[in-house]
Structures are given as structure tokens and as C-alpha cells.
Image (cartoon, rainbow, N blue to C red; front, side, top):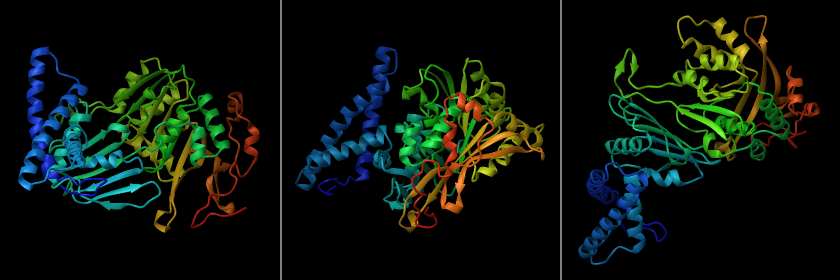
Length: 468
């Protein structure tokens, strides 16, 4: 139990035993309270009563420890043990210190004793185990599912995958049964509430592109933000949504809430919708109780929304999303995983083909050409392995100008990199065909006249990059 003066070491076996004791006592109290009041106590009441029981349990353990060892634990050790028990009972156990660290972006777990974290602009590093066994790790994940899964999410043989949003907006994905050990990936959105000017300060884009994207939102252009995992698509989507007039009524559709537009306060009318996992039983080929993003779109259309924002398009729901963009007033947005900007059209077609056997490439291309106005691609250059940092930035803005001669959507590079200048970030290239629409929305077209955009110098990279 003795550790450093600043952070006492907690014996995980002791914490786990006290957690079991407190859980049993708390269950008895909650049962009695429910019977007497006729309703189950809320989460705050459970935590308050749990905290009191934990203090009592730690006090009993501390007395027993003093009798056995001849010296009582310090107050800091008692406090650390109480927090560890509380984390096990109500939070994320030994994972909690990593969740509480705002500098940690990713937590990767390959079994209970193979745990890695990455901090901002730092490479992955291995950290101590988060459980004593894989069974205990699965138990922890099941506890998290009960706490955060809305009663519908679980991890078991029947449901070997688990997707959750955790406190603070972190996203968890777990696998078991289909893998040799439990595997978990947890990602943090470090930019929880962003605006385009703040994205300029972060170096994601320059003032010229920020003004362009703001005008595109005001002009009700349909926008798809693309890129690989962890490059900042959701953060940019959130920042662009901050340009929507505050009195508009919009809907958000997400697998797990990550945008949080209904809590940020800028938009006064947001209808947030979250997909629901099934309960493991299959009915007519589907999990009972399951609601997908595709299922939610028809309901969203009946909510008198001026725009629909889909957090991430992953499968056949791309078809109803494109139809919303085609038939609606415009101004809808979504994100999509794609490795490069010129792969986006084929990536959309691949997902469209998952919609049904009647879908074809040519129909998918026509849907894309009619629905999308702009594709905004976000890139990351990771130089942490050579002593540098991670650079996340918009590299391309492509305008979709209808069907081309080949039957594929025609693309116009409005913003893109300039390799000849050593600049990988998006700078002006070709004025868009929709420029008049953007000018009516307040965009200063003269900003497109600088081939360097608003960047003072090219991106400073350890490998590559250039000077003017």
C-alpha cells in the first residue's frame, strides 16, 4: 500500500474486495429505498450513498490494517483507496486516471496487461495493466456498458462488440470472443467545443479557408468531411456547425453522441438522435430492438428540420443521407472515412452498394453528383517518430460540379496543397462554380487571389516542407 508521497499505490485486490462489499451493501440500500418510495433512486443518489458506504468500508479496512501491521495507513492512502473503490464501482476502475488526463488522446488495450496510451504530439508508450486478468477487464467493460449504454449495450458471447460514449465525450470500442483476448480502443476528442477561428489558431486551416467554409454553411451547401481515423473530422464538423444561424432547427444523427451540438448552446433547436444496438436476439435477420442511422433518417425528416448532420456515414445509410441532401433545403453535413480526397467518390459508391441489390455504380455516382456540393478532406502528418509533432490540417476542398463525361462526379479542386512550394495544406487553386452563391453569403472572393492563402510560411516539417 505504501507508495510515493504524491500518489500512494493502491493494492488492486484490496480495492476490488471493498468494491464487492460496498456493491452488496448498496444493492440492499437501493432495494429498500425503491420499495419504500415506489421508484428507483437517480444516479446522483446512488453515487452519494455509495460514497458514504465506501468511506465506512475504507475506515474498517484501515483499522484492520493498523492492527495487522502495527501502523495505520496515512490519510492520503485512505483517500487513494476510497477513490479507487469509487472508480471501480461508478467509473472506469484503473482506466480512470488515463480518462482523467486531458493530454491523453488514445488508449489501446490488447488484453489486461498490454496497455498503451498516446499523448498530444508524443508516440505511444506502454503503461501498467488496467486489470489483473482478462476476465476482470471484461467485467469492467460490462460495468461501463451498464453505466453508459442506456440499458441496450452489452458485451457478451451473444454481443461480442461494444461501442460506448464515456463521460467527457470519449468514445470506446471493445471486442471480445471474436479475438484471442479483449481488445479496446478509446479515443478522446480534444477539441470538445470549437469554432472556425479556433481551428485557425490550431493550424487546421487558415483564415481564407475558414471564411470560405463559413460562407458555404451560410449558403446552405451540402458538405462531406473526409479523412482517416483521428485526424479531426468531428472537430471540424463541430466548428462548421457553429456557423449555422442559431435559430435554425437541425437534427443530428450519430452512432454514439460525439458532436454534442444540443449541449454547446449556440444552436437553440437541436434534435439529437442516437442509434441503438440490438439485444442479441435476431428477428427477421436483424437484432431485436436495433435502430440504425438509416432507420432514424425517415423519422428525422418528419421533425421539420432545416438541416441534418450525420456524425459518421459508415454503411448503407449513405443512400438516405444523399437523398436528404438532394431533396432538402441544403446545408446538411456528414463525415466519412477515406484515405485520400480522390478516393471519396469510389468510397461513397462502395457504401451505396451495401444499401441493396438494386443499387449500381452509375446510380451511386448520380446520387453523389446531385447531392454533394463540397468535399473537405482532413490529413495528418505524424512526425513523432522523428522527434516532431502531429500536424492535422485540411489538405483539399473539392467542389462537386455534377456528372462528368465518364459518368462519374466531376471534381474541381478549389483548395489543395502546393507541393512545388513545400506546402501540404489547403491553399486556393481554382475558383468554385458556386462562387456567386458564396459571395451572396458574404464571402470576399478576392481572398482566393493569393496562391499562399493566409499562411505566413509553409508548414514546417522535419521531413519535407519548404520555404518561399
